[in-house]
Length: 220
Image (cartoon, rainbow, N blue to C red; front, side, top):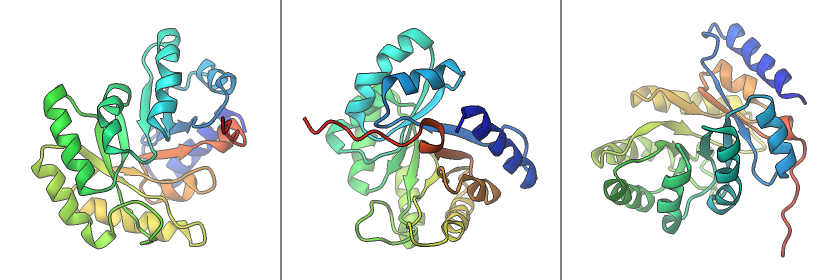
């Protein structure tokens, strides 16, 4: 699906929700995509991208930044504590702050480096045991803990269970964010971003609808 069509659908969803034009940021999720596909989207003017892994981003974006200039990069996948320093050097936003140990590591490295990306706390709205994230009932306390460490918490993020209505999870995330005075809502992907916009999403993460089916990485 062309990038222009996704942008048009976002604009229509904003209008239908009574929201200002441009209030939703499109994150083009370029993880595990061939470089030529990413370049084609860059050539269409997209400058906000999402990656799942620090190492993959490190091998891709420095060169693209030399060619295309400033690019707003979002880490949307899990972050290991030993990759925090590298992530701080690559990403402007991290959407997967999902545990106290990671928060403490981020706070320490932010002090050392003198800067910190904008952070989104990942909430496990479906309370799925296999999925990362803070439990909904623990979100308020975790937001307060992160703020006590001077971490720049911009909002919340969720990935709804695949077998449940996503709108219920988007509504829960919006309620948690509002209760904690947070503006950012990172929610909605290729199949459900219009629902997410209707419920307040400020960032939608769209990959396959822009780039096509992801290419499996070479196991070697």
